[in-house]
Length: 145
Image (tube, rainbow, N blue to C red; front, top):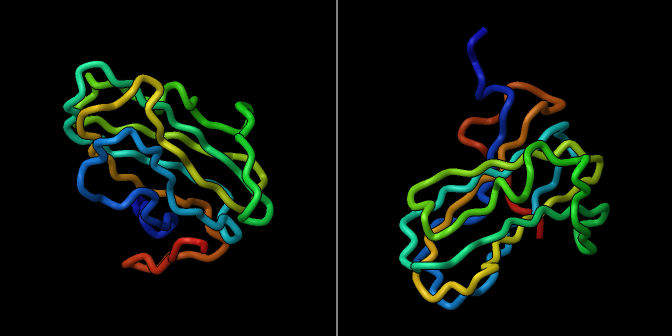
């Protein structure tokens, strides 16, 4: 079968919005993995107008949705370094997978080298291997509060 969407669910991690111009760290929505066995963060990077900025991506996990710690490298598919980007990565995409055992995830995108230009960023949580298929279309997931 060539159907991929019946086994995936989506949740907005970083909603599209006006450019961030002050270097403020961007923190994603919190995703609840209770009904899923896999997850990935997918980032869409827009046009970056800073001439020398660098951004890092940090994935954090939690048992209770309130106290988060950095995900161990062994629980990542890909690396946080590969998910990061620089001023030269206009209109690029990045992905980072999670195979750990915690129920909640969140991500932070922050400038390592100061950003004085525009950061256009959007992102999605892609959740896979649900305990019930097919998943709803359109997706009905809401961020964990």
